[in-house]
Image (cartoon, rainbow, N blue to C red):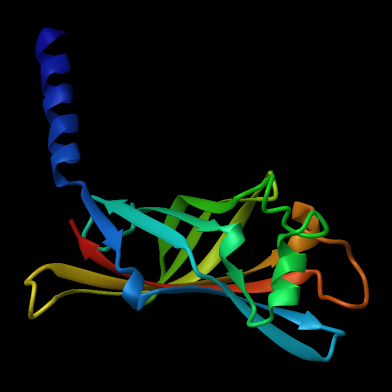
Length: 187
């Protein structure tokens, strides 16, 4: 029994040794969203302050864990009055719910560089499952730093009303398209 426990412990330690952490390069990343206004035009926005990381022990990232967080107070739609309204209790209530977070629960590799990322999105104090379509490019070696880098672009739709962000009506679509693009460097 002792040998089995020692072998199991050694195996788990070797897996932990191969786990790789990748940090976000914010200068080459962005977090955006699009919502339809009056059911006729799209309005784009972004978050200025955010962070993400991923951990993976497999080269193809099929076991990766993605973690993401955006500060609600950093919302930017290029209109100060609208941004203030979005931060208010009418929508995000940034004073009470300061962050939007996502943590993956499952990564499924598709054809080529395509993946499906399933996880839990928490927004406005509500957590719901979210599935993102993603493209993972790389890794490649940065010619200057010699560090490994990779890129992820992920997108999906979120029903904002289901999270308690605003109410349903003719002014704004219930669904919001989100798009996250990140460049990561291996630590």
